[in-house]
Image 1 (cartoon, rainbow, N blue to C red):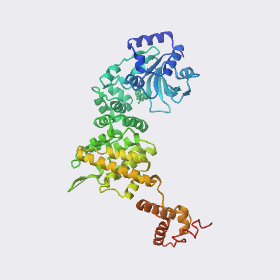
Image 2 (cartoon, rainbow, N blue to C red):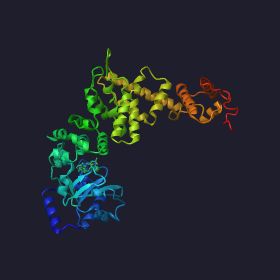
Image 3 (tube, rainbow, N blue to C red):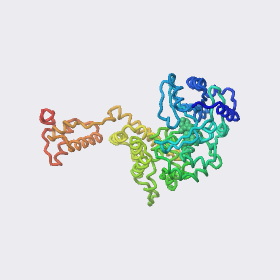
Image 4 (cartoon, rainbow, N blue to C red):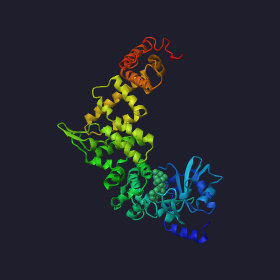
Amino acid sequence: MAKSRKGVRREAAEAEGHVVIIPGLQDLLGLPRAALELAERFRSRRRSLYLVGGSVRDALLGRLHGDLDFATDARPEETAEILRGWADSIWHTGAAFGTISASKDGTRMEITTFRKEVYPEQDRHPHVTFADDILTDLERRDFTVNAMAVRLPEMDFLDPFGGLADLARKLLRTPLDPARTFAEDPLRMLRAARFLSSLELTPAPGLTEAVRAERKRLAIVSAERIRDELSRLLVSERPSRGLWFLVETGLAEEFMPELPSLALEQDPVHRHKDVLRHTLAVVDKTPPDLVLRLAALLHDIGKPKTRAFGPEGVSFHHHEVVGARMAEERLRALRYPTEVIEDVRKLVFLHMRFHTFRFGWSDSAVRRYVRDAGPLLEKLNLLVRADCTTRNPARARELARNMDLLEERIRQLKEKEDLARLRPALNGHEIMAFLGIPPGPLVGEAWRMLLEVRIERGEIPKEEAYRILAEWARERGLEPKGSPDTGGEGSGKAEDS
Ligand code: ATP
Ligand code: MG
């Protein structure tokens, strides 16, 4: 298993040509103690350990977060052995790809054997070829800014493809020919969009063209991998940069064709140059929460299908209804979890409600809004606020004021009533006893009718609720058994008591 002397020497010699000594690098990286302890353990076993990938990039940018990524010449079994007795926990789940994960004092680490090739598609039989040296490992990485390494504990900086310079001039570049890089693993094209946004980079010459040329190859990538990269793009600080890239290269067409089709929707009346531009502005304006950002991205996708031209100009009647359905279908195709799909669908469906309250809100309208939004109320209000991208400052002020007003009304009403759990004046038992009926769908119907009354009129006395229930029952040819003053069978208790 252990590498021959000759192998080690060659590796050192190869790496040496690319080693840069950066004074103060250790302080700059600000690595946790666990990383340095780990490096000592590998050294004492005569194994090399490099900090690699996103960890080096983020450490250089002063924003190290999440798991630390390492590369080593040790094979996974040996890595696990080195970790044993030191790490707090060890995971072998990635071993087929060469990765052993561990945590120590709250630091999560992923240690991967040098690799030459990985085809992540066949996840049950992953095709992985291990490499002997770090340079080969760096070469197969997606972008130069992700292809730097720091040898630990020596703190030798390895940057064979000029990632540091690219980071400084904010350039997204592939270590090898971009078309080849993208053809080998088409997901990298989507990762390009993500890094353009999260690192605020500009594509290097030829990169955009390569994506345009290779975009059809995205078809071989699983929906799950596409979903995960899309999500990471969407929760970046300003996703619009990457989203424009997806549309302009034609890549969006391959997994979310609804997005580019928004560019066709000229909307002269509302002066949104086009719905796409508006949509991406809304995405940027929402806080970086996945559900909220997905809803922002999809909130107007019903517009192309509902566009109509009338004497008063263009209209998009019920685009939120059509859009909610389209959003659901798209997110299902991308294999998002059911809860995410349901939340996004609901937000899209409700995003126009606010605008129907043109002449102020009745209490019942506010109750209904809160009831329908449920736990999504705060996100819905954030989406509605972000949806205002008008350049007309007076109009923007008016919309913001209206939203403040609605939120104030919700606060006031919440002080008086528990809006989160509105209940009708009568419960199921009381309804059954009063009507003299067994459990069944009719009870639910009556209950929902009384809930509507509750929302419409606020709290009402029980006697009043019984009177309404009696009337409702008689319309259905049912004669109530109880009386409106006392409820069911005199006592208000269930019939069989
Ligand atoms: P994040 O901070 O979001 O985790 P990251 O750069 O660490 O970003 P990961 O997806 O965690 O991204 O991947 C870790 C490293 O592995 C990358 O920096 C890159 O060097 C390499 N990598 C990941 N995916 C690919 C890929 N599809 N093709 C080539 N290299 C990849
Ligand atoms: Mg990472």
